[in-house]
Image 1 (tube, rainbow, N blue to C red):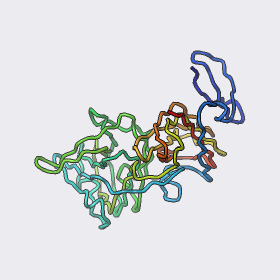
Image 2 (tube, rainbow, N blue to C red):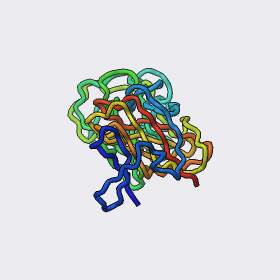
Image 3 (cartoon, one colour):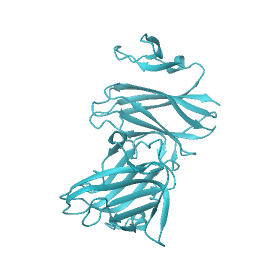
Image 4 (cartoon, rainbow, N blue to C red):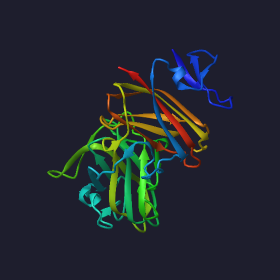
Length: 318
């Protein structure tokens, strides 16, 4: 067995095989087809210009395929021990009818976005911008046992953790954690209980919020409401190769999402900051013949993004 590494001492990226436990490097090729001769190489796409979590024809960061925004499965506002279902308000376009936070937030107040299927983005059209916000917010997901913080390295955020100081449509993109699980959220005894994959934006400390933000409408980027490249065989996508003309910035690693638009399963490839290529192996995204796979930037560098990118996938038959 060997691990794949990139030799950063070379002017052009080389895919290298290094036996585990060895310090010796062997340059195999710049072409993934030659590194993985037993795997079917699926030509991907070429992206012209800078990539990012909010770029592209629709502004959703999709590099290959198309994401179709859908209404939230549920949107719930927690004010102390009171849970208010505002799913209807989130799903239609009446101005400023979504309470993104209670009028006077307190520690542990929260808002919940849930959907029956896994998703990779939340968009909120802010009708009223937040003003005078002095509060700490953490975004959390349910791991099957408890709500836990979503690491800042796993998301890119235009919403300012749902405290945007500007109006308009804002996007929160993220890389779905591998242990993400559905959770039930109830609005009270005998009231609505919603079960789904969820993100929770929770206040952990509050000092002031002069003007609470209001939402006009919200959308979610569900894995099953998307289109992508049709897979020619049944198998497992094991690697992703990406090469850019300009390197990524220095702020943080990019996360590239590979999403099976039929099953909802996903895999995450890491593009290391400051480099001009991404070689991700061992992804293990299962696909059946004629499934469609979408590529989306889930997390961007945030300072300077790779530009003019060529992408290829490696598919192992099963």
